[in-house]
Structure formats: C-alpha cells, structure tokens
Length: 181
Length: 435
Image 1 (cartoon, rainbow over the protein chains, first blue to last red):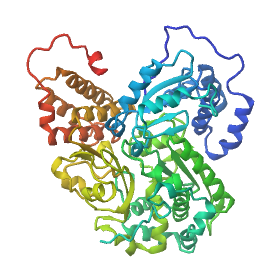
Image 2 (image 1 turned 90 degrees about the horizontal axis):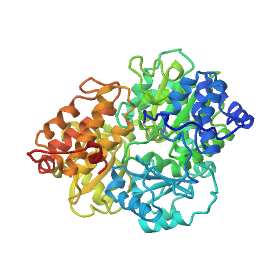
Image 3 (image 1 turned 30 degrees about the vertical axis):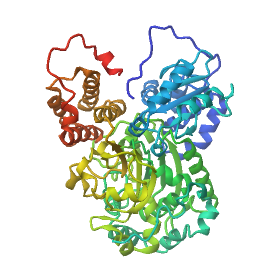
Image 4 (image 1 turned 60 degrees about the vertical axis):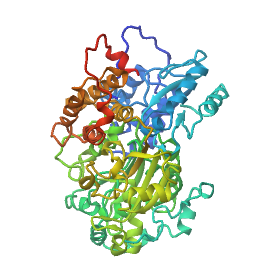
C-alpha cells in the first residue's frame, strides 16, 4: 500500500532515548547482508525486518539512523519503508493477528472469524485490546488458501479456523510471546 | 498424453500424516543432486538447448518459454544475476509454498542448474514476507547446500563463483511483478519499471538478470535426468510437462495436486479434490487476475491455451478457486477488486484510481444503491486500464480489467438484478464502502 502517511495531528513523542540502530544490529547487517549485495541500499529490507523483530514498529528516528548507515537519503528510506505493509510505523499489541480476507478465505467464512474476535475481544480490524495484548488486522492473501480461513499470529500460520476455537486460542495466549514480531 | 506419476511432488505423499521435510541427506538418498552432477558434465549451451527443446514454459503465470528467456542474456556481459520469484501473493495460489514446505532442495538444485547454464554469479530467492516458516526452511536448506559444496564454488571452467541468498519481501503483491521484484531487491519501493530495457539486459543492479518462478526451476532436475522428449510426452503440444494445481474454495479436499498440463478442470475437482461442496457455479482458473470460468465451462482444459478457448486471461498460476451456487458473485468480484485496489502500487493513474473506483461502485451496488448505468460504467472503467489498453506500466490492472470484464460478461444477471432505477438519496460512499 503506497499511502501510509504520518499523523500530524498528534505531537510526536520519542519512545527511546538510545539509537534504534544499535551496534549489534549494525554488526549483524554488516557481516551478514552487506556482502550479499553490490550496493548497501539493498540491505534495507533485511535491516528493517530486524528492526521490526526488535521493536515491533519502525520509529521515524530508526529511518533516519538507517539512512546514515546505508549511505542513502532519508527520503529514500522513508519512500521504501512506507511502501511495505509489514513495516508498521506505529506500535501494535504483543500478538499481531493478521486475518486473511482474500477470496478463498471470504468464500470459507473469514467474516465469522472476525465477528467472533469482535465479540470476544471488542476489537475491529486495526484495533488493539485495552491490555495491549492483541492487535487484529485484515490482510490480503497469506498464500494458504487450502487452509482457508487462515490467519497469521505473529509468525505462526493458523489454518482451517473455527471461530470459537480460534478466539479461545487467542484468549489463552501467554502474556509474553515465545518469539518476537 | 500420459502422466507417469508425481514429478515435482515425488517426495511429498498425498497423506498429510506421512509428509515430512526432506533435508539434504534425505534428498540425496532419493536421487537428489543427481541431475546437477549430470548437468555439470554438459556444456552450458547444451543445457539451454535441452530446456528449449523440452518446451518448458514459465509456471509463474505468463507462460513464457524458459529456455528462450535465458537466450536473451547478452553474451559476455557479467556479472549476471538470477532472481527466483517466490513472492507468491496471488489469491488462490499456494503451490510454491507447499513445494518448499517439504522439499526445498528441489528448488535449490534447479537454481544450481540454471546458474551453471547461464553463468550466474548470484541467485537471489525473493520470498514473500508472510512466509516466515518457509524462509526459515529455505535458509537452513541453503546453509546445508553451502556445506555440501552446491553453492559458493566457481562454475566449472570459469572463475565465476556462484552464491545463493534468500531475500525476504515485506508484504507487497506488486513485488511479484518481475521489475517490481528487482526494485524491491535493490532496497526501494516495489514500483515496476518501464520496459525496455528488459531485465535480461539491465535487471537487478543494472546487470543482466534472469527471473524465474520457483516451480519452473523445480522442473529442471527432472528434465536433465529424463530428457526433453520425456518432458514433452506430458501435457499438450503447446503446454508440455507436469503442473502443480492448487484448489481452494468450495471443494471437499482443497490442496495442491500434480498432473500433466491440459487436464480438465472437472477432472481436477472430481479426481483429486473430492468434488464441489454443493453445486458448481463458477471457478477462477489461476489466481484472481485471470477472470472467471462460467457455469458451462466446467470442463475447461487447464493449459496455456485456456485464455484463447474460454475467454479468460490465461492459466495464470493454476490456483483454481471453485465457487458453488450459493456464492454471491458480486461480493466475490468486490473482494477481487478490493485486492487490486489495495495492492496497486499507485504509480499509474488508471490503475490507482480505476481499481479504487471499481471497489467503491461495487460496494455501492452491494449496499443496495446500484443504478442501471453502473453495469456499463463498471465495464468502461475496467476496460480502460492495463497493459492491454496500453495505459499502465505493469499487468496488475489487467487482472482487475479481466476479472470485472469476465464476471460481467459471463454472469450479467447476477449484477443486473441488483441494479434498480429510481432516485437514490443520501448515499454516503464511505458508509457503503464499509459494508
């Protein structure tokens, strides 16, 4: 999606005093990814995947730091990062539930899954529960149409969803996840 | 025409309980990397000729002859790159995911063969961001392949060292378009490029680049082992070889099945998928951009000629989506159009605006505010966008174009019955869009 824009109505509050691009992330990218590509800029996607994994969202400062690190302009970083849907610019809940809404999942009843989540947790797509545990999104095809309806919970695919059982499963998720975003 | 049994899925049994991940040693124990050894003993030109003779056509959707594509590489221009298109994002398509879930080395062997034949310096596997599990599997398989000398060594007779890396996308359908993929590989937004120059001349990092689909490359080992005549013995004259078919939607046993090209859709549904849930009404032959097959086209042959014969765009990825007679086709078309509106990269105006307006119009019709002129208006907007009418850079809008066009042509009554004349007051598009 090409039109993610900054919300200028709310004043921006930095969430972290140290740099997002830590020495260990720099080292990881320099050693693993820079040798793979003829240009440093190509390490942009791997770098922001690491950032997402570490922080769960991409802060404006993180983009500025990445620009200096990759040797490209800040505009170029922002241009690329805002294009990709997986790079969220705002923090989300501990568990991000991406419910697929594409054709096979709609045929097999993805709306019932969303409705059940709405009933149990009181959240619509794009919203987070008050305790900050679950954020639900509606996304396009996850490439698991034979298991429709399906959803990604953080990095794990859940297929053949039964609305009640899935909502119960989400309710029973531990407060801290085994892995990051 | 005779199908000898699974070729690509030979390591993946039908019974889900028996499926397991084939690691390097399991793969070698079942004849893996035999083809690579045989290929390395052949001159690269002979491999390209063999692939041309086999009639292997690209499995990613366009069906371009694979060997011919390789010949477009300019002579003596190095380094050359191979970009493996694993950005499988088309709704209804999941064959490549399924293949690499269990048998990642068949892809790596195909990559090694293609790289040797074309003197490739680096192969990038561009995998979509949502495939977290598959990325882990492939990363491990690549490490195993490095440890066993498949990658990281010079091609025989040259000093070109071949490397293979995984590159993860981050959730954008358009990055499956070949030049959008290259832009994304370079760390930019995935905006498709204007061609020419074609990727074979100036692709990734402005160097000659071949882009092949996962399934295309996975076909190579069997072609090397069994020869072109064997490969051609499957399928139809214009569409040779085995094919992975995905089936989803209203079928009893959705999944990935392998047969030769050119089988009837009814065969796929009845022989493999346990029949339709309910009564068949319509089906999409290969991912939502291909358009729809009508109620009377249940027996359509699934091969590269399907577009010409049955008024759809083409075979696409052969991810068949079946719909029964309880399906509301207007809602399904809105789903398809919303997908394109959401995934349009925004570069070309007809696509960016056209898909969004089609979505708004269909939402309005579903909300009960359809007007008789909407039928023609939908058609007019749809037909105005895409490579076909020559108004966009890439083929994304053609998908929306063909979907709307074929839905309206083949099921006009489903739409016309929703359109009523009379004054419509107080319609808020924003509220209609939320239905």
